[in-house]
Length: 294
Length: 305
Image 1: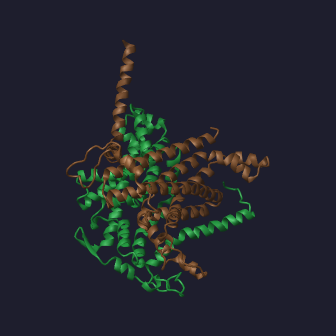
Image 2 (image 1 turned 135 degrees about the vertical axis):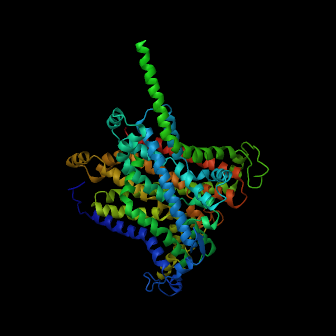
């Protein structure tokens, strides 16, 4: 694509104008969250005849102060409940990410590079399950998790959200795609040198599939962070809530306190957006790899 | 003797390879079988029983197809199924066409500009449905919402938005649209970038118009991407849940209830009949599988591969 100049035609100009308008439309909700979270109560309410505060003239931290009012205790440290929610979101996402990367890279490597009995069946099962809706298994999952005794405790219920995320076959599929790129001759050479299976995996395969693992890591982190229905069903105690559930709760309890709700939304959205912007290169790579032959 | 020894040796090697492979697969299979396949199977079995919160202690009994028969007689389920269909039928073509348009508009731009637009359209996905919905809910608010403010500023009458039975579903579709196009755009940008440029140039030398180049060369070669986009958008639209639960709770008067939302309401809010809700889940899974297969068939028939 380099070296080719875009011709400036009327069509091109109209396209660019439309794109910019759309970009504003897509960015606006985010802008409204962030500005809304620091607006004063009087600026949130729109009175008849008065103009809307498009840009906040005064910055008030009152909404955040109210958001952080209720306190809780984690590892003996006093902290606002909302910070605990944020911690839970991070905990779920990081643990799910680490487990998924380990299980998927091992499995994807085996599916791509090894010929074994039952390979076709296992792969077909993974692919078929991927096409089915994740949410229809919510009820049996809750039954299963309560049988396992996981939903009774705060930490147990956090793991009840993590395990199904790790089990989701997309990661295996993605890592299989990346592992196809490992040259078989390298694996053969390692075998002739007498390297064991694990050593071959760590020394030969892993360096090659590293970008894939990066893509999968960021992908899993974001999808675990935003896995709302699963969180809604599994996490019932207020200490176990994630930040997403926390704001959803705020909205149903005080539906008209938009300042408070926006402060919560900002707390939920800003960290994940920073993670995304920092790692977006890996992310786009992961999305496109997952679609190849999908 | 010497000839029969070789196959035996390779059989041992083959067996060893299988064992090693399954050791590599074991951690993934543990989570997959334990927390995806098992609940799927449990859900299917439960859908044939009268299992509910009320009889959790005493035990449930098999009722065969009663739940399924009841579904087709339940007016709320029929309404929810209709709403689900409207969402899918509107959003799949809209998302596919729109993301293809954005993709083809930006894939030739400078990499910085391209990344910027790709990011902007991806942001609502990253932000997460909860944060996105709460801000939209505020913008849709009858009194303090931005939309009605703008309408009133131009001298119009404020609209009821999510409180109206006719408008609420369209509000849902609009939000769903903004959270659905991020991934397809990323896919289209990369697919269009991979179209063989020598073919495009040859056609241009032969005097083909931009439109001809698009339909004759680009469209066929991005067909797999279009198929993938259509399938994932279908699956996502069928599963649309968080937006509805947070924005309207299926209301007013079930005008925004979908199969997924009704399933949730029955299982966790109202009667807590798990068997009945699982039957909806099975139906939903079957319909999604059917739609995906259909798209596969229709679109694959369109290419000359």
